[in-house]
Length: 111
Image (cartoon, rainbow, N blue to C red):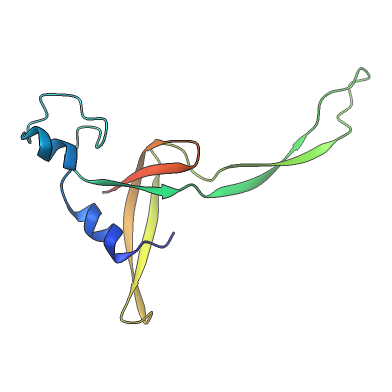
């Protein structure tokens, strides 16, 4: 998954919600960063196709196969992100952890 320079800079910072509250000790539950104090960003989910069998008929057969799209990763998984530098000559790999999800996006933070 390719990240932009702006996303990388955001990930390097502190959690904005924790900054607003004015505490780094996390005396309150912070849903934005899961009490880690690190900044998080939302990225689009990566989906993969999976073939499944259809509904079972009365005679016990599965006559139809169908393909569905499911998320490639789940909450708690560690994934690799990268961004290019020097006009695409090289790239830097960044470890990310998925901390929450919505229907179309994952919220990730740098580990």
